[in-house]
Length: 341
Image (cartoon, rainbow, N blue to C red; front, side, top):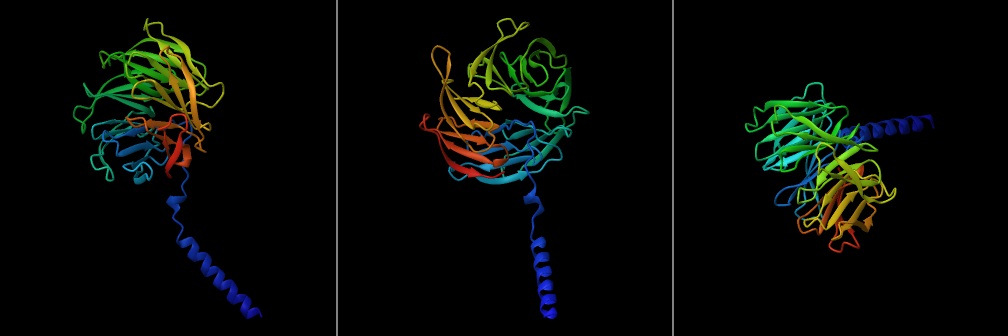
């Protein structure tokens, strides 16, 4: 009897070793998105989607068939990827303590590093490019740094602006001569970037909650900012030295707004609302935003992108992965595709 017990234990040990041998440790690595808004950028031909995935770097998806998105490549970075910007075939990655990485993505499944921009002791948390002048703005934990990327392999430092708080998002605004900042510690800030070597603060307004995303409608005249509350604010820059805000849309605690995107005609607004999923809002001729529909993505929606025809919405659903939503009928969105990060 003892002999059979010994034999059973030996076989069990061998089986256990075999199981351990085939475990892929990389596949077990969890997606960490602590306080991270996920940038979602569609390529010009809308066949490729780029998404930042925090500690896992960058995910590149083939969305030629939206119902069957395919992960082409996970590009691991040395830092923690907070945000993305795309210009032509160059992708800019804000990689925290590692600064900003420039990737050639002309061949989507084989991204190639072009250059690094080191931001010193400042964590790179957001990034925006002014294509006309090849001026790159990098939001950091201590303000903004500006670089000339005309020659991408050798970026040239231009200037900096020091602020209190982390710049979670930024974009060029007001005819591209200024920078609009979502400052997590303060609220909204407006910089005069006419002379990139000497960016200057024009004005700002304190906002309740941590500012996380800033953007505009397609006219470029209206600036909006989301904080980690349920309300989306509209910034009035009639007097740029004394910006004012008003609540543009409030879902009354329906979920934090991590990210938002306007439709092609600015008549609709798409919100990534954390555990509340995707929300579609209509904007009337009176300028008032009203709830149209919602879709529970089952995760924590942190990023959203919409195709030009406004028939497909892509949602970065936190650690749950990419969710593809059919929004042909705006009142009844329906999930048609999924791919894990």
